[in-house]
Image (cartoon, rainbow, N blue to C red):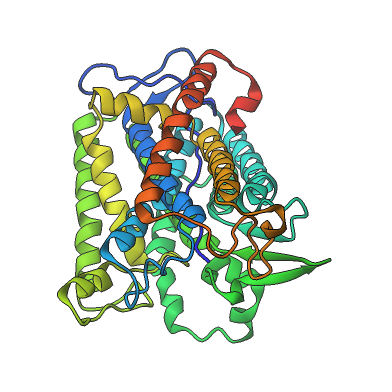
Length: 425
C-alpha cells in the first residue's frame, strides 16, 4: 500500500493567508495591513502541490501496476512518476515551519504557541475524519490512517510547546538539526520491547508495513504511515529558517544562505549515498543494468523519512526557494494560486479525485456489488479497474484544471476577509 503525500501550512503573520507581492527587487514580502505573503514560498508550495496530485491519482487510477520502487518490476516512467512526488512532503513540512515563524511576527510567544497547538490538534482531527473518509470512502471509518497531515499537526503541537516554553528560534533550529541529522542512528540500535511499542513506532519507525497497523477495537484499526519525529525535525528547521524572512533581513544574504544550504544538502546526500556511509537503512548497489543502478542510487527511504531522503528532496527545494524570490510571469501567477490555499487545495483535490474515480468505476461497467473488495481496505477498486500510466497524467491535468478556479476564488476570499476560522483553513 502506498500513501498519498502532501500537506498544509500557515503563512500569514496573523495566522491567515494574505496577499502575495514584492516590495522592490531586494525584498520578497509586503505587509498590507495585518497580513503577509512571501511570493517564493507560495510558488514552491504551489508547484509541489501540483506534483503531489500525480501520486494520489496514480494510487487511485493505475491499479494492478508494479510497485514503482521495486527495481525488479518497475519501469523508468513509473519510477520517475513516484520519485518526483518525493519532493512534496519535505517541502511542505519545511515551509509549514517557515510559515509558523511568520505567523508569530504579530503575535506574542504565548499567542503563537497556543495557536500552533490548537491548529495541530485541528489538523489531526481532520486527518482522522475528513481526509480518512476521502481516502477510503468508508463511512464506517474501519481503517484510520495517519499520513502527512498528522505529521504536520503533531509537529505543530511540538513546535507550539517549544514556543510556549520560550525557546528561541535558534535553539529550536538546533533541536531540529539534531533530529534531522541523527535520527538514523536508531537504525543501528536494538530497542528491545521499546522498539515494539506502537507509540514508539508512531514517533520514529512506522511505515507502510503490517507493523504500522494496530487494532483499536470494535473492528477498527489505526495505521501510522508517517513516523512523527523525523518530520518534526524538518518543521523545526523550517521555523529557524523563517528568521531569514524577518523584516529588514538582507535579501541577498538570504538568497546566498538558501543556495549554500541547498547545495550543501545535495553534496552531503551524494557523499553519504555513494559510499553507503550513513543516513538510509536501504543501501544502493549495482544492478543488472546501468539504468537500474542509477535508480537504486536514488531509491531512498521515505517511510520513515531517512536523512538521505530529506537531503535529496530539501536541497533542491531550498535552491528553488532562493531562485524564485523575484520571479514573475505566468508560471508564478498560476502556481501561487494553488500555493496560497494549501489546505483548501489538499482537501478538495481528494474529493475531486475520488469523484472521477467513482465515475470511472461505473463507466468501466462495474456494479454496486463490486464497490467493496474483500482483499482491500479501499472502495471502488475491483480487480481489473484502472487506466494506463499515460491515462494517469491525463486525469492529473483534468484535476488541476478543475481546481484552479475554486483555489483562485478562495485565495481572493482570504485576502479580503478576516474571520478567525480562516487561520485554521
